[in-house]
Image 1 (cartoon, rainbow, N blue to C red):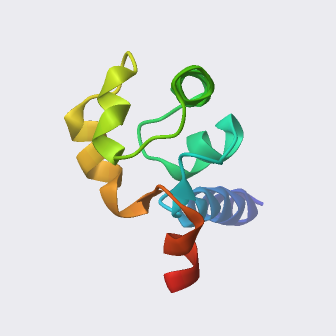
Image 2 (image 1 turned 180 degrees about the vertical axis):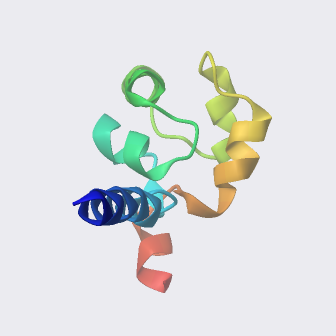
Length: 93
């Protein structure tokens, strides 16, 4: 029985690792997709990204995320390869 719990725990941890770090378009993704795909971005910061985008228009560069409270350059650098700005980037991969 203990081995079943251990196996289930490992599967849960592995599934979250698989989904984290997926490329995401910060100009079109909803808060749930942002929180799931970007390391260090929870639902609160993800919703702040969406709100900022609705108020100020699309992001032209990933570094504009520093304008959102709680997001710094370290977070952006950690996620830079997964931050997309347009759909063309998705089609290239």
